[in-house]
Amino acid sequence: MSMDLNSLKEHYLRCVRCGQCRAVCPVFAGIGNETAAPRGKVFLAHMLAAGELKADAEIAHNLSLCLLCRACTRECPSAVPVHKIITAARSLLAREVPNTLQKIIFKEIWSRSSLLNISARLLRGCQNLGLTVLGRSMGMLPPALDLVGKLPRRPARSFISEVTRPEGAPRIKVGYFLGCATNLMFPHVARSTVAVLSLLGCEVITPRELKCCGLPQEENGQMDVAESLARSNFAAFQRLGSKAIVTDCASCFAALKDSSAFKDIEIMDLFQLLNGLLPGHNLKKIDRAITYHDPCHLAKAQGITAAPRELLTRICPGFREMPGANSCCGGGGSFMLYHYNTSMGILDKKISAIKETGAKIVTTSCPSCTMQIRHGLAKQGLPIPVIHPVELLAQTLGIIF
Ligand code: SF4
Ligand code: SF4
Image (cartoon, rainbow, N blue to C red; front, side):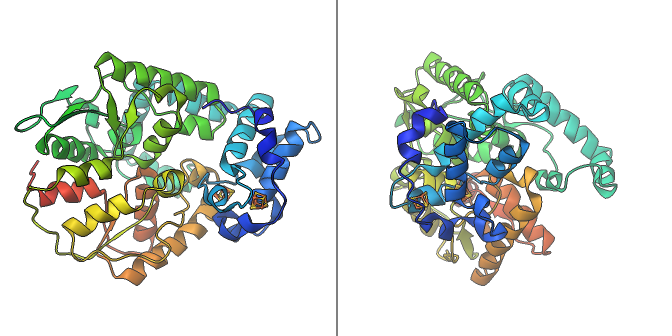
C-alpha cells in the first residue's frame, strides 16, 4: 500500500480535534501528553507535510509513540485513518532523519531471509552461551530482549514441505503464508497449522522463497521495502498456482490484506476456513478454562472477532471472555523495543484482565501478542501458557507430533 503523506491530505484535514480518539488510545492513557494522543500525532503529521515543522529526532520520537493498534481509526467519527497518517509520516521521517540502526535491522537484515536466519542462529548461540543473560544483567542489552524467549533449534521452514498433501480426498488447495516470527520463534504453531489443514482435507502450499510480510518495514518507515517484499511474496504464491492464502499470524494477515500486490489472490480468514471444514470431525474437548486475546491486527484492522471465538467455544466448553479482550496488549511489533516502560504499563492492564477470568490457558494468534503476554505473565510468576488456537485444535483433533 503506497502511502505518501501529502496524498493523505484530504484525510488529515478531516480531523476536527474533537478528541474522541484520545479516550481509546492506550499510549495516551499511559503518557497523558497531547503529543502522544492520536489527534496530536495527526496534527504533527499535518504540520510536517505542510513544511511548518522541520523533520527532526524529536518529531520522530513523538510519532514513534504509537502501537498502530488502530483503536483511534475505528473510533474516529470523521473517519480519519490515523494509523495510515502516522505510518506515512514515519516514512517521510525515515527519509529526512535517517536512523542507521533501524535501517540496518529492518531494511538490510529483516527483508533478507538468509540474513534473518543467520541473525536468529547467532542470537540462539548467544542464548546457549548465557551471553544474553549476562548482557541483560550488566544493562548492556535492552529489556525488550527478554520477550524473545529461548529460540527453538529448528525453524519451521526446515521441516515444512513446499507441498503438503491432504489426508483423504482433497477439498481445497490453499497457500500458507509462513511469517518470519512464526518460522523462527514459533515453529510448533506452523507445524500445527499445516497438520490441521492437511487433516481437514487441504493441500497446503508453502513456497520456499517466502520473505517477511513487510509489516515491520512499513511500521518503521521503510515503505518501499515493504512493497517490494509483498511483490516478491505474491510471485512466490503465483509460481505454485495458489488462488487463496491463509496465515496463522494476525499481523501477516493484516499486511497481506492491506497490500495491493495481493489483489488477485484471496486472503482467507484461517478461523473461518477451519470452522467451515470442522463439521464431521471428532473433537476431543479441552477441559481447562481458556481465554482469548484479540490481536489488534485481526480485530481492529480486519473486524475478525467472531470466528476465533466460534472455534474456541467449539473445542473448549470452559471458554471465558476476558474484560477488554480487544484492548491492545502493548506489544505493537517494535513498539515494546523502543518504549519498553510504556509498553509494560499497557501490558499490566491486560494481565489483570487475564487474571480476572481465572483462565488456565491464554490463546491468541499473533506472535508479537504472544511474546508480550507471555512476558507479562512470567513477570508476575503466573504459570499460564500462551497458546495459538490452532495448537489447541490440533490437540482436539488427536494430532500427535
Ligand atoms: S477522533 Fe478523529 S476527528 Fe476527532 S480528534 Fe481524533 S482523529 Fe481528529
Ligand atoms: S493507533 Fe493506537 S496507539 Fe496509535 S495513536 Fe491510535 S490508538 Fe493510539
